[in-house]
Image (cartoon, rainbow over all chains, first blue to last red; front, side, top):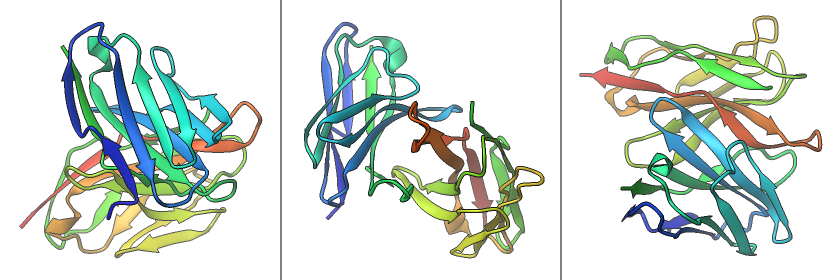
Length: 113
Length: 116
């Protein structure tokens, strides 16, 4: 079974719609992250969370919000989707300070028409 | 701010060829350095890492040495296989506002294609 899961795996939506991407992990890690991947741009950090009560903005948080519902769950929302948010979105986890290795989910491909 | 620059691809090689993918970084201090690999249709996974200057990370026949003099962390493999075809990312920790480090800053990725 996958340690980091993401739902949905693929989503097509229209401009202006609200979208939620979900991430769950069974690794017992405190830290969770959301990245987006665009062709030729690598990955960019959107938000990260040290624990349930801690949320931090990353490099490109505008237009996104997150919710850490539990240690194992971290959701990413697009309140009003726009076409330039079309990308591949990855959730990742890590153990904490000093353990920078991150474990990635399989990704969600989001298309905004 | 901290950043990573890596050679752009795609890089196309024949099986058993020698591989080098260049990576240079700009950072305050001497952060840990990482190579991640993304196989088709999958998320990223850690390939190797080095935590201090002159360290050599290695895994699956790949190696990279942390060179602070040249601020580089080039990825090498002596004999590539078709199964090595993937996208490779160089990365370093992204410093948060508190001066610590969390999340990762990635290079743009290098697409490696190995032909039989």
